[in-house]
Amino acid sequence: MSQCDTSPSLIQSPGLPRSADGAPVFAEPWQAQAFGLTVHLHEQGLFSWGEWAAHLSHEVHRKERAADGSDYFEAWVAALSHLLAEKGVADEASVSALQESWQRAAEATPHGQPIELANDPMRRAS
Image (cartoon, rainbow, N blue to C red; front, side, top):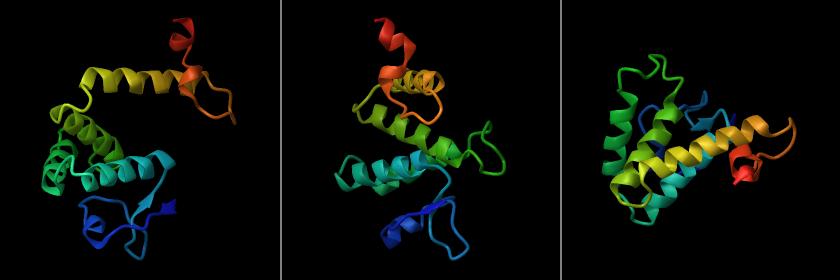
């Protein structure tokens, strides 16, 4: 896991996985990227931290979420996707299509090679 340097207010995000000393940690690079993107969009004034917290709380408490919190960052990405759609930045259908494209690209990429959208077989076919 990698540690993230953040401002004190962001470290208080409820549910954020932490190391033994209390610092935020991420199991996968995409989790740190999702966190960083959210912080950046907030700092740019796209949404308030209260708006973010409400969207994240809604996603984390959905009945289909894992009781042990193992899907916390999946909830994080879902909350960000919904918030971006609400703000008119990206519609949910476009975000979903892009997620599916990345998934296909990951599945089509040989082990050890970088995953690129160009590896999505459906993009190559068009």
